[in-house]
Length: 466
View 1 (cartoon, helix red, strand yellow):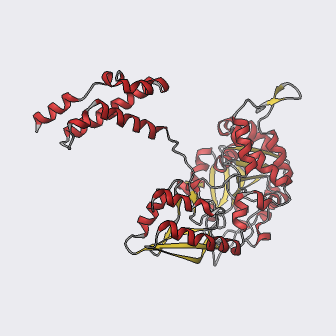
View 2: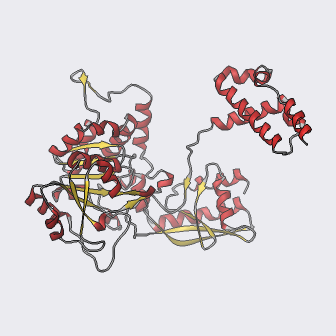
View 3: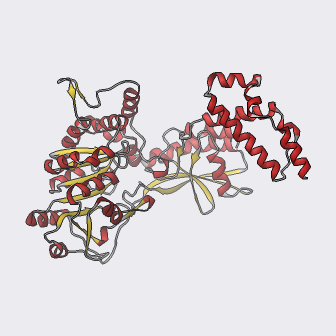
């Protein structure tokens, strides 16, 4: 066996031979030589490893033509984008793992426009000198929220971090124990507070906090009162919290600013569309919050960003903090955010123009009618051995917004006597583009709330041969 392995290893061509083979010429003409060389080495290393492990490797597999065929296949796969479109049929509208909010068309157009040319990102065209990159966003946010000033960073966690570091570095921040939340990715308020340089001062208990708890905790080293919207869980039963109005009163009494992390945040009242009300940024500013932070890619329906609005004196300090530069947004984010906020400012029917809001507010009748049209076509695509049914179910908003609320929806349940739900889900993920559903009670479900075009589903199954 050892001699056979040595003979096979001797038959392996050198990298130099592979690169000088006629079949390599087209690759080297259009690709970086170092890249092609590295791919050759990796294939040869894999073959050597297989031979040494005693795996079945024949002379045919060691031939230069065979190795170069592998090279072409590998390069072809390597050139395919890794971030690809998928169909979200999970029933979670704002699915963090699937990229959260789908951008409105004006935001997509803005991305293409600014990505393809030089833009006046930090250039004042009127004065012919350097300008501020957040200026156009600031004006829109001020108009939409009633705040004195605004700025933007790359996500809401960054906004909270910047606020804490700016206002309370080396000083105490008072926050209720019931608001020391953890969100996705093990991100915890106490940990980000520690990294910001602020000192955590917990008050109250997990389920009950009172105004006097804050009053008693205030001292000469207190720099900030922090309120965190518990967007990803609810405490039900014997509980109480200090609302923003009470906290603002305490802050004014002791001349201490109040900062609120809204998490999702909203610019329109969802209760107008039959959904529970999520805190509105404009209302929180009207109640007296000095600093307010919220996300751009959740309920707002825009790109990932951390939006900061509030009193001019505090926002100005945050903008001058050196960390602001480290956390700032690039031109693509700013362009998409400007387009999204402009829709909120100008649109006569915002829920039709923001895909996230449109998904939230679709009528059950509309979803059911689409499901009825889709069901027979999907049955034909899958084959008679699959059992399909259109059923009632519920969707969720996702990304920590309104965690206990569910939205009525319709799902297509798919079953097969010889195939478990996990295997059906795997086959759907293998479609082009992949279709992501959910599994419940050993049945694979396609939630239709976020499916606006049934053709997003049907052609993919035909291509996969399901």
